[in-house]
Image (tube, rainbow, N blue to C red):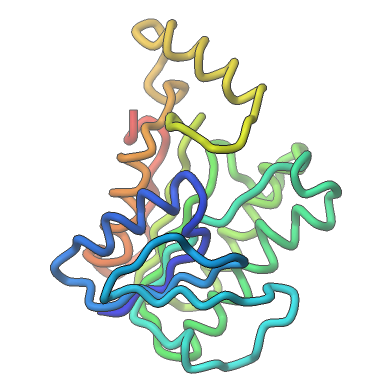
Length: 210
């Protein structure tokens, strides 16, 4: 099968990419990026694109499944509008293009606490995307809601780093829902959702990843 991977350069996306390229049922991976991806593989297509000027209906987005690992922070985005564009509007644009091209499965890396009615902006946007994807009539939709992502980032997120240090120390005492989510388990859940999941909506909570 042919899989579209969004966010291939991020912490989760890199792990997902490795697993897709090793998967016996995946023949091609399309991973659009802003800058050239420092990786080569016979099954990998990584077009450099301007995400602000995407073409409608391009055949390159015609795939069997989509995995979305796109995501930023309010601080990195610089504004609420910019955050919504990365975490809601961009994934939704790709989802619509892929669905129009025949994609049947979608796997989303969302977040613990995602809720379209949340009073917290971050959680509300995540929940809005989940709801919007649910309305696109994918045969199978898998939503993964990790807690703090446990992995080695290239970028420095001080708040996340402090939270991870504390949660690792207190791990035996924490309920499963609040334990760190290993990036390897997040990636595997996303790949399974895109390649193997049966019809329907599937929710993978943080406690399932601990």
